[in-house]
Image (cartoon, rainbow, N blue to C red; front, side, top):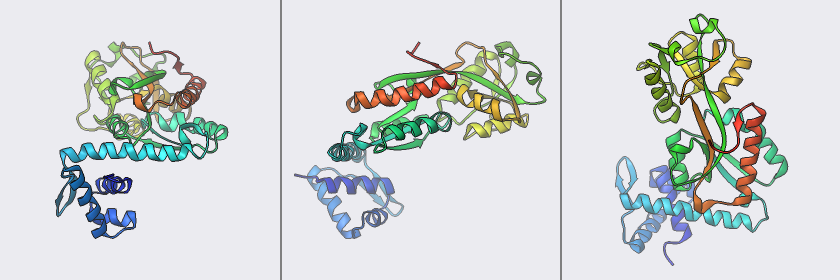
Length: 306
């Protein structure tokens, strides 16, 4: 029966690396052999999978769909093999995607506890933007993601916690001389700093700035929360930070003053998200419970989605 699993692996590897030569090297086969297998698969499927050029190869429209399905087939085969090796959750391997604003602050202790309870479970964590998490989940590259639920429609979503957003300002900023929550009136005509637009947080900040009568800086878009916090410390504007990150910085940071926001729509929900066809109830409950326990230990609001 064609295409074979080996041919699917070849197709996926070529798509990932973008060149036949690199794919052949990664697969430890000759380039002519790889090309012949791809051509045979194309003939069997009666579609052209790749456009070849001097710059490399790119999938055709139909090729992209074949690649997506091939990734899922290969993953299911790997899971099947893992299941036969024992009863470890997720067949012994879980590829978990997470927002960069969540991963470093929530996962370390949670991962350690999961490893103690299930030492045979291999947990692979990737930090990516909201857009890349969505692509990774749908392509089969990721099994689950921790992200903002509104950005991933038509998925199974287990609410984990709700974060209040906080502001960070330079130590000589007028807001640094006060304590307690910051209201909308105090942010009028202020410059907001945020991440690039591939992140949900950016869209939240644009909405907040409009609501409060401020503007979002058009001179700087951060690639990390640390970068926008340091820009705020320099007086370039006000950084809007998620609670999980802000609480940690309030405890250890001295560059900025940090205060919670008290403005409508100044929260964000975080959920454990997966495709419906990938649901493994026992394993999902295990991960969700561990994440909620860790969030609760850090003072975040957990429980059912509001």
